[in-house]
Length: 439
Image (cartoon, rainbow, N blue to C red):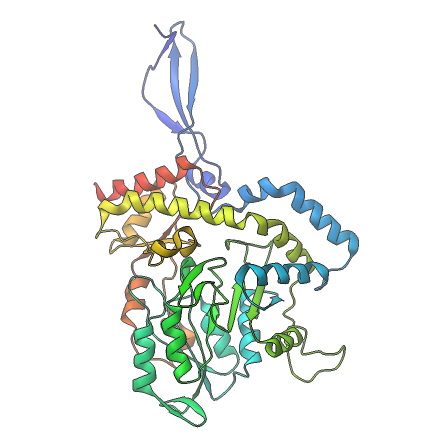
């Protein structure tokens, strides 16, 4: 006979759900018990009750000493702007992505902006991209005085639809000796497909469509570092499938810095040299300026941190993929009420075909599901609640409808998938999602 018994079933959390959610510490259950001799105590269970959407502190704890040592080394050198650490990171990222040239930038936004500047995008030009993406993709275009033109997405992948792109070129544009022009007589200077959530776009089709009208393609690989695509020429890595691309090292990215950071990628040596000038105020050589650039330089501290993190990227990506496979298996019976992300390249590429920067489900009951999960202390996020063409700053310049993007904006929900999640946390997320549909 046990020397204690449960006198009543009152259960309380060791800490409030919102506190656990903000700190990233999973809460435990405490059950009040009464011993046979009349004593009172608590019996603690390790059952997870709260799951944060993201927790950067967990990753930092595992790398803390070596990262702080590297930061100290940079501080002791007092060399903070560009320099050997940035050059080393550029070489390693170029090797990882399969690009000939990688140019460190202050952010993914600045990497895109510099590429557009390098291709002389400006007033009188248009750049085609997806309306279902982070704002910077379209914002950089407008910032240079060009017009962002949107083409709708594929329903299953959330990525730019090659069919809609070809329809736009055929129905709204004319090709002549000066290039591809829109009905407004804007010169189409580039197409920017976004490898959203870690899945590459249908690049063979997009590159083929654009090559026929001599329009460059710039890959937005901000969310897809390391993701592969099964091109007709063999597997290629996101950002270097075509001629131009860019990455982001925002802290919550799969490879994240301790602030902003980015990388421009290109196979064109002349453009690479120009980008190195553009990121440094257009200066080359020192204090001589042939072009107007900007202060887009990646600093040595961020490069040093990223160099320490880079060797772990494959392991982190695999863990994200493993979590995604668990979710997909657990949610299979919930379809079509809940739709999991698709993996169109799984058969040929396996784990490398989707890096799962986000695990985004879609459901017509998105807001109800989110509230249900919040009530259990499970963090979620919506990427993205408003398509770019519905943003106030673009609303006057584009009155067309993009039904797939608008539908996705009302249905998508991102679940926790960062690599430091425990198995128990992943299981409770899946259980709480399933319980919503069993009510």
